[in-house]
Amino acid sequence: MLTRLKVSGFKNLVDVEVRFGPFTCIAGANGIGKSNLFDAIRFLSLTANYPLLEAALRVRDESGHNNDVRGLFHRIGNQVGDEIIFEAEMIVPRQAVDDLGQAGKAAITFLRYTLVVRLRREGANGSQANPLEIVREELVHIQRGAAHQHLIFPHNVQEWRNGVITGRRAGVAFISTGKKEDGTAIIKLHQDASGKGRAYERAASALPRTVLSSSTAAESPTALCARREMQSWRLLQLEPTSLRQPDEFTASTHLESNGRRLAANLARLTTKEDPDRIYSQISNRLSGLIGSVRSVRVDRDDKRELLTLMMTGQDGTELPARALSDGTLRFLALSVLELDPETPGLICMEEPENGIHPDRIPAILQLLRDIATDPEEPADETNPLRQVIVNTHSPSVVMAVPDDAILLAKPTKNIRNGKEFTRVEFACLADNWRTKAETKPAVVSKGEMLGYLNPAAVIRMEKQSRHGARRVIDHPELSLFVST
Image 1 (cartoon, rainbow, N blue to C red):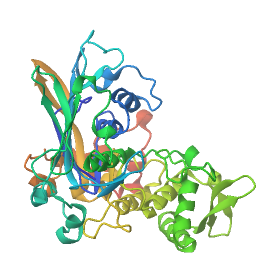
Image 2: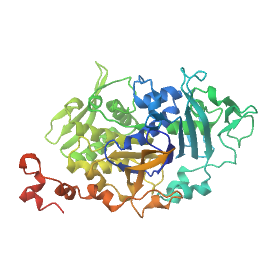
Image 3: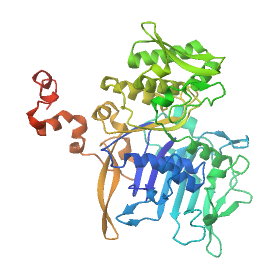
Image 4: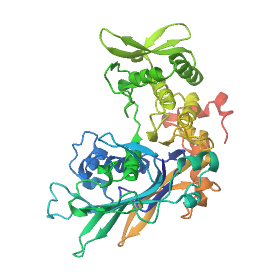
């Protein structure tokens, strides 16, 4: 669970600090930088699994064909910055399994990870093969006694916090950055046993990937748990074409970011628990969301070895996934995701209102909130340590989310080295838990929220449609229902 993120030098994220609760909604106009925050989270996640260069290319292009990683660095005019700084505080799982199948247990589960990446100078040794280098990498613990200073969103201390933050650690870091006598920067991986024993040292400039990304259960179980946590941060982009596809019997049983493997995912859930209960829970959830749903099931075609998702309406007509509407498929995928305890971590979702009828927006927002962990209840299989962040520019979404969950992305003018530039900042409403942070966030003014709270009033102030055509909002039978 990502509880705090500081970013500087990544696209238009300069000196940005954001605190997250279980559910966060980021609102703002198109092109303002909402998605850049998601890209920063995604880049950090990718560095836990891939070499730096590949991680950077995957942020810009999923296929990895973009060869200009400079697009990730902050730019003022024609000048491109050469350094990106990340600092992330997170709650990690207690146990994890490495790539060799070895299990490790974290010494402590509340950690702070710092990564500083630099763009190599032109002509530097190896710059063509790897234009990025690590300047600093650190993984340190946050003591349980200081947790209240960092976890400031409302939560139950006994039932939730004391269950997810466990273990203790002396003053030694798990990963640290130092220097040799000749000034060469080195990254050190310290052993979990209070830092005793020899630290593994690696020259920072020669590293093609982070030390965290190669951690194992034998070397540092805590770093491994942090790696697995960061790998679980993903951008969920549910594509109807992918959601409609049947799955082979041998397919992966975990939902992919684009929605593939939905049938296989649901089939796995029904093999571990009572199928009738799982199907009934999903059917009931869908009935509350879209109505007219009698049942859901997965059809097994033994001849073709295919799994196909089927849904039956109230009229008794059964349809395969390929015949369902886009909105129904998205509801279905999220309903399955909510019941899957094997899908923890952070889920980022852009514009969840897309393809959804306005009347159903509160329902999908409630579903997304239900997917996230409930910090008032113990974290277990029925309440996994899961987190949801969405972004939107829809007034209907903003008006329906809790007031302490909203962040407004807005442009701010700054000057650096005598040049003016625009960066994005994330502001919260007054008098909520974010204003209790040691670093005070910007606070949204009433005027800045007007377009979200009463868009009709803003529309009324605009000119009539071209050619004098009457707008819907001006229709006499409808205008009575619109506040001004």
